[in-house]
Figure 1 (spheres, rainbow, N blue to C red):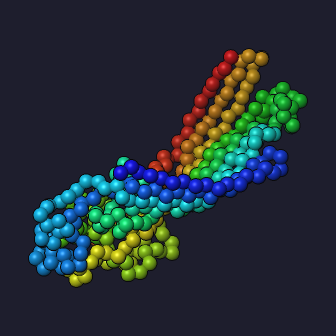
Figure 2 (cartoon, one colour):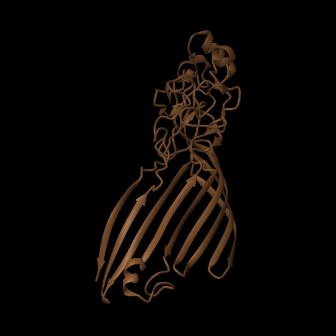
Figure 3 (cartoon, rainbow, N blue to C red):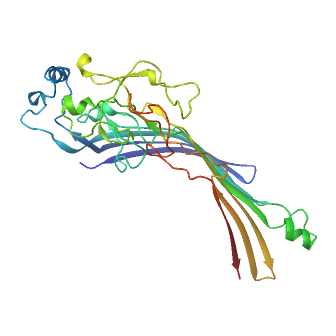
Length: 344
């Protein structure tokens, strides 16, 4: 079955103050027939789980198709929904100044993220492998708030500018300078807490997944805990990013049911980065030009923190102890370079 996506958009643009252009848009989409990795023969019924617990492991007769073992592969019955408010302000280049900034509020939901099966957007866990709708929730790629922009400004000094343009010495000292930069600040990556013990492999016979290792990087069929309180803390930090007491192991031995946590209900640290460039142009006659540049990546050295450890009861649960753990965008540490360019 072919994947299908329907998209719609409504936007309004307005020019003001001669050089400025603003726009606001609503953008939405709905996709269907998307890929969903499945095990059609996973035991999901309460009676089947009870029988599995009573006998110390899953019973073949309780599978949906009892004559078969694992029935793995891909189905194409998953969906996704995206809605966004997109705003932009641009200033055309005039008087040495150019700016462009945009802000996006969005919400992206789906049954499963297929971008590289875990290599994009973080770990992809799910409890139930034969029903996409049971996993419907916030996408790994859901970025609620994103503010991005760039600006470039030629300082108004020296030859051809408004100030200090009548002296050759001053022109060489203060003329020809240009400062520019880009910035990004956006919501962090979403994640799901998983049980320390993956009862799926023992009690439901799900073939995909396994017990989460200390690195919390396994993908596939994993048991979720029960939520008994708010997972948020008032002042989250690397040493305690979430309220660990808000989660308890959902053991089938007492409930014969899956954990009640909703997929991707928690969010990691936001991403922030500023890049800066400073350049100066020199002219030697009419044909030879020299440009000196200083370029800085992540000039304020904002850290790129990953999601916390997600395994309930595991080592350092709820703590962030790696910059890239859990996937997502990695911001490089501050670095800079000096360069010179001659044109003739």
